Amino acid sequence: NHKKNRLKPDIKQVIYSPAVKKNNPEFLEAKKREIKIQSYPQALGELTRKYFTIAVSGTHGKSTTTAMISLILIKAGLDPTVIIGTKLKEFGNSNFRMGKGKYLIIEADEWNASFLNYWPKIIVLTNIEKEHLDYYKNLKHILRTYKEYISHLSRNGTLVINKDDKNISKLKAQGLKLHFKSQGFSLKQKEAKKLKEILKIPGEHNILNALASLKTARILKIPDRVSFKALSEYKGAWRRFEKHKFKIGNQKLEIISDYAHHPTE
Image 1: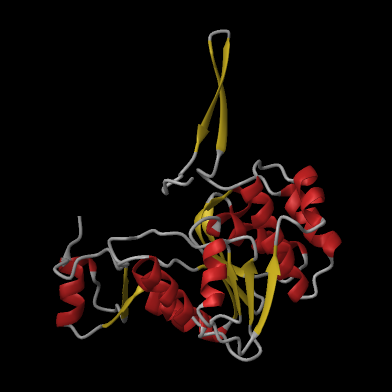
Image 2: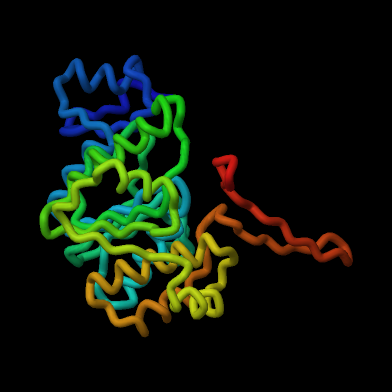
């Protein structure tokens, strides 16, 4: 129910979702009044330049890994600002947390190449698969776009990669120029066993998400004891294999709510 009169006289900037059509009445009104207009990725991109930004990217695990890194930094007293693609109980069922520290942690979506607007100090790359084929032509196009995104890292930046992912290996084989530091994580690490024991959320994929978070925390010199404590307390995110228990009569039931938007999930 968008209407042009929703734009009050004192509005100085309009930020819109890339999903909004250009014939939207509020968008057209902003354009007519020459109000500054930015897409959400463009506006967020400006913020990434002002903070020490940690961007979590990849086909799977972005929301969970962003959440885990955020909770580790909070536990470490670093008070980050966080923008995530799902709701967290720890954030009062919100997808946003405003902090006072220098860190901004974002879920950096690859849809529509949105992440090309971002300029992070650390990129966490969970995995790469074919997806968003309404925008990308094929896997080669996806990998080429990731290479461009990764090139946004500065010389003192760090790329954190999943060493077990075959398409990330392809990315490296295509001649990814590393003018920055690169660090990897893998299920073969000894820490994987401990994480399997302490995590409240199931699955090898979540062990990988936790390993990515642990690696990021180590780059920031956060002690492992802080990281393991935060990871052990993580309750999971909204619609990420979320369990709901209830009772009908004498029957106890459990329903799993899971986003799983990709065929391999």
